[in-house]
Image 1: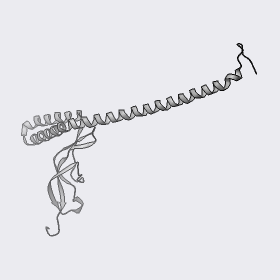
Image 2: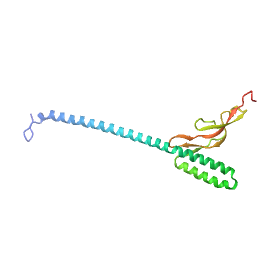
Image 3: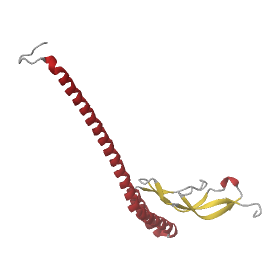
Image 4: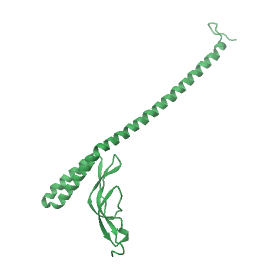
Length: 171
């Protein structure tokens, strides 16, 4: 047996020291696992809070976006019909459009000939056509719709008139 300065045998303490070191390693590993689990929980809860905030924001702004969108469409219609004063109405419509952009909404302005998209377009009228290629496409746009970029969905569908193929008995 080897001795140290104070007369205690190193070999006698070696099993106790090794066991204590191993217990500390196991405890540190357990602490590390718990810390990783806490970190994962924090990240998951943060993501959930962000989703809830986005949903809450969308719920609060949805009526505002819808009303401002309708106002912009009404101003644009007045601009087209008001002669010289139309420039003023167009300016107001542009300002309302900028307000919509500031809250994350953008206009949905389908082009004639594009396919009608359920959810993004609301068909308010039908234009009959003899061209089968135009069936189910946008004939004209009565009013723009609005897409909420933060919520990722159309809040106000565009009002469109759609082409419909004439039936044989109608031709």
